[in-house]
Length: 169
Image (cartoon, rainbow, N blue to C red; front, top):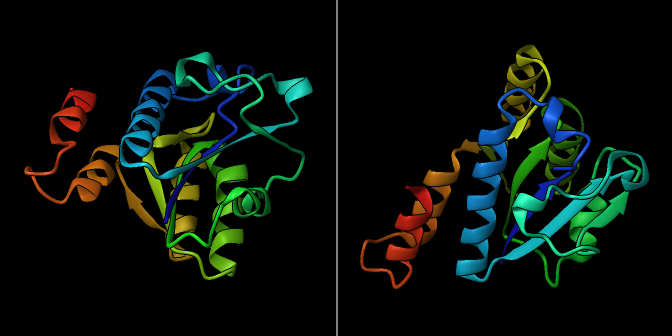
């Protein structure tokens, strides 16, 4: 099973992120792709009473996210999984805090982690770049949402090819 984890893309966090519109759009494509392929989806919210809910553009139902206070969401993600995932694909913010700590927690448990580099963000570019380097050093794979979706397809003959092609346009 592949599990997609959307980390803390919340009303009060997202506007502060560098390139937030592109990040949210990429995360939205990732969610749509996960739904198309029937992959598991877990959404977290860091302290939602203070930081708000998940941004509406992602189409996550109210109450559909897991509330957390810990920066590392690995326990919440794995606790929501119906079985042990073969891989966890991660998007969200902030890259150098909750995303990085979640990657560290998943990697410590031996889980394969794929970070959707165009669907994560930080307020400052230096934090983003450093987080990406750190997550790679932990053994996380870095990909773009488009490359992840086409990996899931595997072939242009896949039944979902047209749907996924429309997603990335």
